[in-house]
Amino acid sequence: MLTQPQWYQTAVFYELNVRAFKDNNDDGQGDLQGVISQIDYLADLGIDCLWLLPITPSPLVDDGYDVADYFGVHPDYGNLDDFRALIAAAHAHGIRVVADLIMNHTSDQHPWFQASRRRQEPYTDYYVWSDTDQAYSDARIIFLDTEDSNWVWDDEREQYYWHRFYSQQPDLNFDNPAVQEEMFNIARFWMDMGLDGFRADAVPYLFEREGTNCENLPETHAFLKRLRAMMEDEYPHAILLCEANQWPQDVRPYFGGDPNDNSVPGDEFHIGFHFPVMPRLYMALKRGDRSPVVDILKRTPGIPANCQWCTFLRNHDELTLEMVTEAERQWMWEQYAPEPRMRLNLGIRRRLAPLLGNDRRRIELLNSLLFTLPGSPIIYYGDEIGMGDNIWLPDRNGVRTPMQWDDSANAGFSNAAELYAPVIDDAVYGYQRVNVASQIFNPTSLLNRMRTLITTYKEQPALALGDIQFLDHPDRALLAFKRITRHETIICLHNLSDRGVSVEIPGTYDLLAHVRWSEGRITLLPYGYRWLKVD
Ligand code: NOJ
Image 1 (cartoon, rainbow, N blue to C red):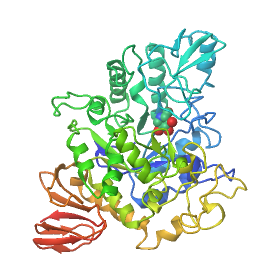
Image 2 (image 1 turned 45 degrees about the vertical axis):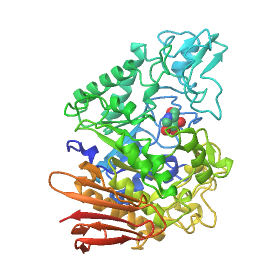
Image 3 (image 1 turned 90 degrees about the horizontal axis):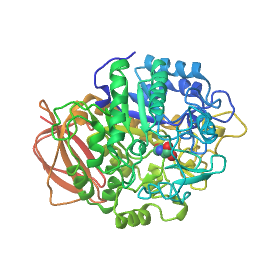
Image 4 (image 1 turned 180 degrees about the vertical axis):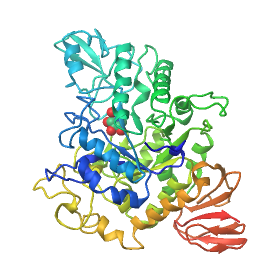
C-alpha cells in the first residue's frame, strides 16, 4: 500500500474509460489487461492517480452507472484477478487508483430491484416506492432529453419507483439502514482489493424529503460522514472524491469540518469537483475577458486544510451548463455547440480539442489554467493528444471513442474486426493524424507539452497548495494571479485574447521557458501563458 499523507492535494488525476483505452483480448472492447499493458505510458505521462469509470456488471444503459452487481467485473473488462493485477501494476509504478462508487441508484436489472418489485424481504424497502407520482415534486429532472418524470409505474409492484437519472436506474432508499450497510460493505470490498478510494457518484441525491429539492439534504451529509468515518477507521489510505454538480457554497458542506472555521479538519470528502469554474474557463476564453473565472473563484469559500478542490476541462459526460445562468447557457450553446447534435440535456457533448477549434494555443492555455488554478487537475483520456469526438454517436458516446495509439487499423486500440464504437476517422482528428505514437517522440507535440506541464506542476507545490491572489490589470484579457505559500510565489499569466498583452513583472524565473526575466514589461503572445517564479 502506498502511504503519503494528503497525496490527493498535489496529485494529477487521469480519468480513464476501461472500455475505450486498450483491448488486450481482441474482442473489440477495452479491458483491464489492456490498461495494464499501457501502464508505462501513464507513468511516463506523470500522472499520480487513475480514476476508472464503472467496471462492474451492468446492462450498460448508462455505460455502467447502472450497476447490476456491485461485487464483480463486467466480463467485457476481465475479472477480479485482472482488477487486482491492475492495482498491483499501478502501485508498482507509483500510481494510485480510484473508481466510481455508485450509491444513489442501481440498474433495474439488479437482483435487489427485482426482489423489491416482488416485495421480497429483506429487499422490499431497498428502493423508493410510492402510490403516487406526485411526491417530491420540487426535485428537478436531470436527464431532460430522455425523462419527463422522476417516477415510473411498476406493474409488478403496482407502485411508482423514484429515479433521478434514467428510468432504468431506480434510486436506492437511503432511509433504510440496510441499504447504508450495503454501501459500507461494497466500499470495503473494493478497498480490500487495494483500491485507493472512490469518486462518489451523484451524492447530492441520496435522500429525499418532501418540500425540498431533494439535493444536499442534512441526512445525506450525515450518511456521508459515517462513510468517511468508517474509511478513516478501516482504510485510512483511501480517499473520497465528491461528485456534486452544485454551486461552491453548496459543495463546501461536502468537505465537512466547520464551515466557519477552516482550521477544523474536513470529515466528509477529501476532495471535491469544482463544477462551476469549468464552463467559465470556456466563457472567459471566448469573450477574451477574465471576469467569469475571477468572479466564481472569489465566490468560492475556503475549505479545510486537509481538503482539496478538483478541476477538469472535460470528462466523460456532456460539458455541463447547469451551473450558469439561462442567458449564459444560451450563449455557450451558440458559441460552442452550433449544431443541435452537439447539445445534450443542459450541456455540450464535445471534446476539448474540437471545442477549441483544434487551436493548439487555446488548448494549451486552458490546460495551463487547469494546472495553475486551485484544485488537483484531472485529465480526460485522449485529451492529452488532442483527440476529437463523434457527434453522430448517441448519448455521450461521442466523447468515449477508442484511444488513438497509432496510425494502424483501429488506431492500435484493438485487432478485432468490430469495435464497441468506431475510432475517430475524420480529416482533422482521425487516428491517422492524432495518435500517441506520432507525438511521443516529437518534442513539440501536445503530448510532450502536457508532460512538461505535469512535471513542472509537480515540482512546484505552490501550484497545488498555494493561496490564490488575483492581479488587477486594465486589460481584462489578462487572467493573472499569484499562487503563494510561505516559501514561494509563482505568478501565472494567461492571455485570453488573440492579440498581444503586456504586463509589468518583478524579477522572475520562467518555469516553462527556463529563462530569467528581469523586472520590467513582458508581452504575452496571443493566447500565451507563463508560469513565473518570483526570485
Ligand atoms: C454522473 C456520471 O458522471 C454520469 O455519467 C452518470 O450518467 C450519472 N452520474 C448517473 O450515475
